[in-house]
Image (tube, rainbow, N blue to C red; front, side):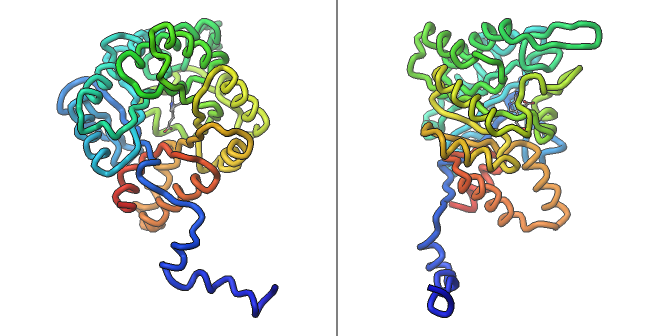
Length: 329
Ligand code: PBG
């Protein structure tokens, strides 16, 4: 039935009416806030390319986490800046590693029980060369060794689970890591700790600001030999299938905004809980426009998050988590 019988605008007349027929919703409990934990006390070091985001010592991270809990945010995603780096990233699996210590402090605080503590698993913040696995060199050429990296990644996963992580989230993109981590975690008695696999992680220019925040820029070469090519949807589906077969409990897609089609394809095809990571560059890009007054801050922020939910993500890792939660109140 066409105009004038059908008038689409009838249901858009008031906010009450629009709210009634709204198909997609944002809630604070489906937002995850990333934290960058660093050594020291009372440290709150700003990150120039990410306004409002800081490197935080553990005491400061706990304060930040308390705010997140009060705002009803769903959880935290923890990254660490170790005091020292080495060839094999041993700081990542040290029993007293920076994230391990952070997790113990966060888990000891009852006010934070409503937050799911997710630990990112990767080597790039801990290796002197900045790559996500073990490196071999052939003159100027560097190669990230897949199979030699697996035992290290598995050790990190078990160590973080033992320190109290509620979820382990591998972001390294080595083949076989999910199975290796599941085995190591089970051997450590952590059968009940789920794996949230960054199953489809693309080699993206949008990770630039994160590398300042996490001090994880590769010293030579880039990550295109292990992270996915931005052009490939079918390959992303294969990555996900394999991670599910290896024992992934949940999936994370990354980046989010420029890859909404991939999120939708994954949602239509797989039934596991699906998250998406609105990465550092997506945040910085919007902030740059906010600072110039080119975009309405609150509206653009919520619209960027709503789009990711509409594409099919159940939850979103975002640096806007606190700001968005305040607005959604
Ligand atoms: C570690 C890791 C990265 C991000 C999350 N985990 C950086 C990278 O792969 O270079 C990026 C997150 C962001 O940009 O916000 N491998």
